[in-house]
Length: 436
Image (cartoon, rainbow, N blue to C red):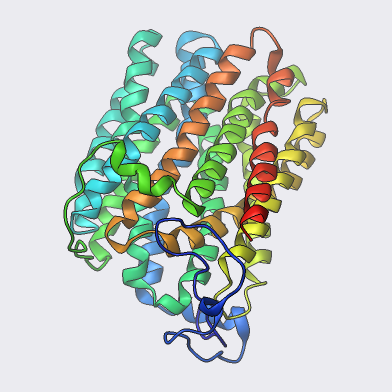
């Protein structure tokens, strides 16, 4: 953020990544900059004055839009093609699982390439696969074809969103990165407002249109990348693409951050797959989920703006950020529980809005902590692993709903949404307190 009074060094850099009590490393470092008048709002105004930041916002918005559209679009298109929401839920789960499996290794590949030029092939492949998937859904193909296509649809753009985040340190001064990640979390919620809402509107004409529109978002991002400056790959020895090579990311603080992303993903996957049939139960249309998603994301954006306003123009210590992140994760989980209990559209919307207030701040805090912990030569890979954790959770949550719909029903499935976030928050807090 622009201007700060004193910069506390990261509490635990290196392999352990954990937090510790304040010590000598918590004093201002040589890179600390004096605090500018105006605090956080001045920092944000100065950030928007950066041409590179503004161009990055527009290009990354189109790249992310397809990801926010895909789960809902596949759910509706699968239901239209096969006649069952459970089949659409399997497609959404397959998409998320494909992305989760491929994201870390695709991120590693992108770390070795000049960005954003290295995004050309993934974005072109995304357009091709989703056009084929839209055609297959329109022709009412069987799940045996739709599911593999959905998995491939998750694989081909994997790592792209993480690569955009890896570009940020090359575009934004280090002193403004915390503000950049906080604002980016709010902008991500704007994508979650636009994406599902657009799918819902297109589905009123034909459910497959939402799937086809995802192809256009990738092509738009590809065109906008021409206006971004290049980031050369950070020199360093190549890392073999094996599961063992991911081990350093699962030590200390990053491990807890990835687990938090997984928990949010599971809860979101349950809500995303179970709410449309739940709406049918309460006498509404499944397409109304697009509007409810917009409401949740709008509330999340408000929460993100309020959090951004608390940043006081200095680098916040890791331990403080982590404590807030775990608290917000627990509140998110607890406030999802009413979704399985209330039985009308207004009550569902109120519960979603209350939970959404705590969503964007979590994303901002996780991104800030990860950027501090990840080595420069593996930034895209590390962020991609966070996206993979969320996508894995999304797939698990959607798959759980596909299993529970025919037994517990949509309301029973929704009761499981908040369980894992609360468990991870409580467990993480206990582990954190044991280290300080």
